[in-house]
Image (cartoon, rainbow, N blue to C red; front, side, top):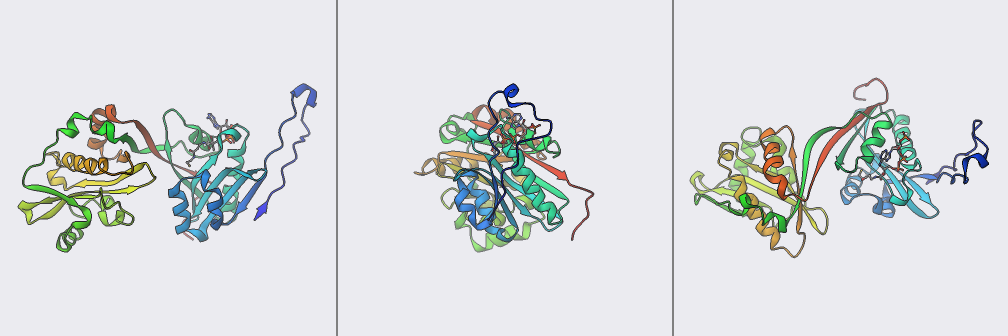
Length: 323
Ligand SMILES: CC(C)(COP(=O)(O)OP(=O)(O)OC[C@H]1O[C@@H](n2cnc3c(N)ncnc32)[C@H](O)[C@@H]1OP(=O)(O)O)[C@@H](O)C(=O)NCCC(=O)NCCS
């Protein structure tokens, strides 16, 4: 582990201390830690970032700020294949904010990837309309203005079961809903054959199966089509109290008839019956305008939160293409 010494506070242009009020606090030291040390600073990031570092150990870098022995700030990045890197997380403990620490952590992480030859950084952030501190910091540090690509909706089971259009949904008797894990081998093969056709590539259920929640992931079965699967919701427990409805999809040939709503209702019923998470979250891509409009007009009153999934990038020099 390398720790930097705290930079000198004296500058040639510094005014006499008496004219400045109390002496400024010394800058807190930063340290570069190996990826394996993430467990010691996991309180400064999310479980999904900890998991991502586990998957990309060799290319991950952590920069940590210390106040004595207390880790109070963390920047995490992972190197990409094309002279790029992703800023996975930047966080400063609330009591240590507003002292330049976030910016120093970011600068140091960027310098690590620049030294490795990276020419572009990318970050995916969730922006709360009432708390845009991270987006502002990034823009001040030369990152592009973030662009919105997803609406991130949050709600609770209590609110879901007060939503009239949800609880009133009925299912045509031609359909039934089963647990995703009970889908037959032949039905799975039919989905695979539909990839790139009726199955939207970004909603391929097999991409989301690892660690899926077995009790709330569901499939829509069509008896008029030989018990073929015509839709699914694949969910994940992302914390003790939050279930993410990660991927929800219905065969577009059925969509106009709102087949997805009974599927959501069944997923909600199963979630409500759990002893576990009673909050849930799901994302609506903005490039699906019908869904985005539905989220803003019909879902919004029943949501407990609506945030924006954004992306931003920083060009550190002319893009040089793959290594
Ligand atoms: C964003 C965050 C890292 C900023 O840390 P910080 O130590 O307070 O930031 P700094 O003091 O280094 O500020 C850096 C710049 O951002 C600006 N800034 C930071 N927070 C701001 C805010 N709330 N409003 C306006 N500007 C802000 C500062 O003014 C400063 O600008 P300057 O360089 O032009 O003076 C911190 O607020 C945080 O951890 N927020 C939560 C972020 C989060 O949720 N991360 C997890 C997901 S990745």
